[in-house]
Image (tube, rainbow, N blue to C red; front, side, top):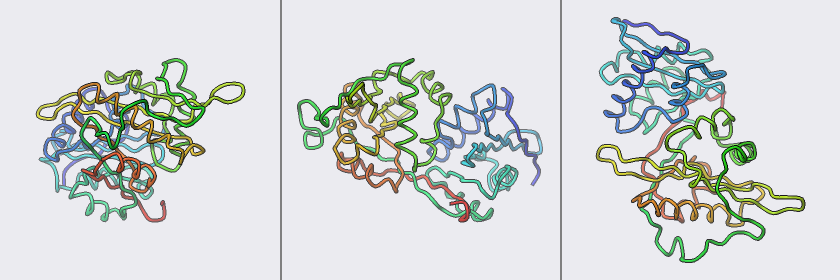
Length: 306
């Protein structure tokens, strides 16, 4: 196998080649090889703290593979479809620092992921489900009239420049046991706010009135995916979280309905979401709302790192 692996932030030309590689992989596999977080980090001109980039080139110098590992070891990689089964994926994984402690995502999952993971000593440790349902909700899932809220709670939309710190604190609490979402930083949030798709009108915050003020206790951040090729536009429950002390009082379901009504008002025909398979309370809420699993991503890791 001819080729070289480069570690370090890629330059502009290499980033463009990686984007082309990802598009080619997505077209063949039917799914994006990289999550939004990976794409945002790759687009930065300065390297993100703790992130390691690995670029694989073939014997001619063409970019045929790319991997990105974050500070916690979570890793995504892709190999160009016409350069697969040549050892490039294995070379990328073994070149990354801390390789035995990697947690590698396979989105879909990809049929080559299991053999590659086994070759470097990794086994499946986590599943992320993509669920979808049509819009609007039917009356059984969303009865007409105002959406009920727990006593003392009101819902408003996010205000840029005011709500970032409170949201980050609640997000970390709500997702403390559920992977990358709970580790989002202010830089991560600011990068998302700067994207073309961000809309504060679709970012709902639940506040509880308490002596001396109000406290953020829940949120539903929605996203709209524009039409692309044969794929129609769709909404997304981008992230929905509730303070652990509020669980069981119906706030999560109410926030879901508020956000889904907003997406339906945008004339979208369906809505999707991503949820950890072991987040049983969230899966139960979404299932009652009519969501069904349409794709599964698998994370691989060494048993001793779990």
